[in-house]
Length: 120
Image 1 (cartoon, helix red, strand yellow):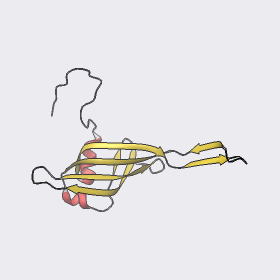
Image 2: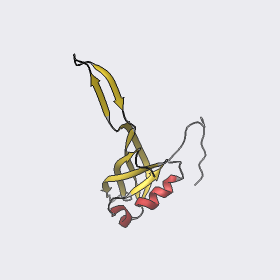
Image 3: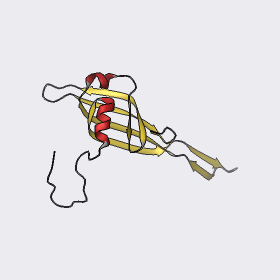
Image 4: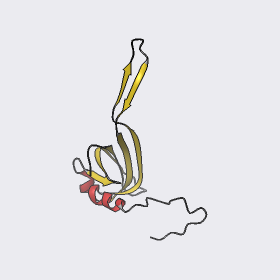
């Protein structure tokens, strides 16, 4: 579907990514929002004899995510342990939720993790 955007063209409208169709095909969910948070997979501190930190190490980023959207394939959405590839990472689903309403389409939400050491 084509849209006309007015004003500052630097802003990106919508879920503008070709991988969105791949997500729908992989887990049965037409994406509306994808929130990704990065934090170190591990952290380590080295302390001196006074307990003061003198060294700090962080590992590669681990990503947690929440994806919401419309359920387009209920059987696929309910399948066990789905995963999808997005921006070169393997996102592993470890939580799912369905929202049913008498005034809206069936929505779903999945959450999970992606690790630097687990490639697509």
